Length: 145
Image (cartoon, rainbow, N blue to C red):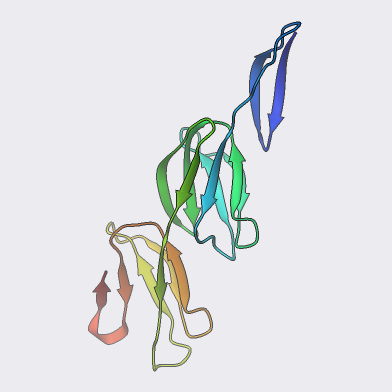
C-alpha cells in the first residue's frame, strides 16, 4: 500500500510498502553542540512553519531530510541541510557579558540593525549563529563583534 507517515510535525508522504520487501525511511539527525535554554525552533526553510523544537535538555532531533532554518531567539541560522542518515551538528557561538554595571541591559543587533535580543547581569549569556553582530554598550555606542 501507499502510506503517509507522521514524523514530528511533518508527514513523509506517499511511502510505498510492497509485499516481501522492506521499506526503509532514513531521517537525518540535527544535533546541537549548545542548545538554548529557552529553546530553538526548527522551521521549514521554504514556508517558515515550525517543524520541531530543541532546547538545552533535548539537544538532538530526528528530521525528514530537507532544508531548515533554526532560531536562536530572533536570530536565525538559515539553510541547514539535513541529509538522509547523516548527523548535522550545529555549533553556535556564545556571547557572555561581563559588565561591572549591574542590571545594565545591553541590546544585540544584526548587521541590518535589527534587534535580536539582549543580555544583562541576570541573563548574561546568549547563543548566536555564526555572523557579525553589534552590542549596545551605552554612552559610547555599539561594539561590533
